[in-house]
Length: 315
Ligand code: HMG
Ligand code: MG
Image 1 (cartoon, rainbow, N blue to C red):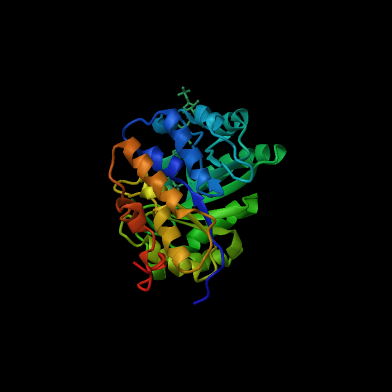
Image 2 (image 1 turned 90 degrees about the vertical axis):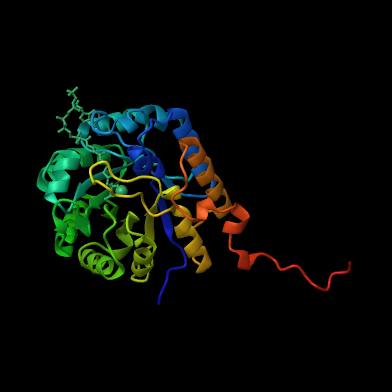
């Protein structure tokens, strides 16, 4: 197997995770959460979404949260933007990087953003114009990249076509979302392979939800193909409000543990990440989804790497 020396992790917990929390989370908690995440060494933390509060009331405080976070130099703080209204709000809040989002499934797109795939792309054209005018970097998401809760299996060629449209519009990176976590390694690779024929591999990211415990296996299969950007959510927070039963993203700590154990660098301090996982779960009053975050931290960190006590010590 050929693995890269470094993987970029895009932390999506504050957005993808908290967009789906039933209880409302105070803005101050979200701000502290994001600041703690950047203190772990994560270089990209997706903060929130400037979407309609009627659709996602959990993120109605987007402006307050974005303005409240500490902007650590060198860290990217993207936000989701669905239309021109969202872009205007994001600009007013001082956002420097956004993500636009569509899907490879027509039905999912209607339910999620009230638009067909081609309507959504038309809607993004003026957003891209505004982004260019303000020097804002744009990431693109393709949801239902493997399966759709309404349409079933999705053809990899369809995913590749949507990914190529977003790339050609000027997105610097395309994140391929297994929104409902149906993928398995061979299907994941087939989909990434189709996309890599249209978009350079180094411009593709993978975004696996862990509904069926396949996310880590899928990530391993895809980084072996040359993928070097992985989306994850601390403690596996989240789901999708328009995909019934979808679990959260793969837990960031699981990804970091696996990669560091394979001598692949992420720049993340796993101890601090686990402390943050425990902290946010206590704040939300929930049990961590990831097994790693349920363990005592010293036990969670790789026991095999702890220095062995020397038996020849005196006394
Ligand atoms: P619509 O109802 O068709 O929009 O929704 P509209 O233009 O008719 O506007 C309806 C109302 O919302 C109006 O207010 C607008 O002003 C307002 P009213 O006149 O009724 O008082 N409005 C807004 N307010 C604030 N910010 C805005 C905004 N836009 C309109 N940006 C729309 C269309 C796209 C707005 C809506 O469907 C929406 O916001 N959808 C967001 C859904 C969402 O966030 N889903 C989750 C994220 S996607 C995801 O999780 C997948 C991903 O993780 C990858 C993966 O896992 O696959 C990315
Ligand atoms: Mg998602």
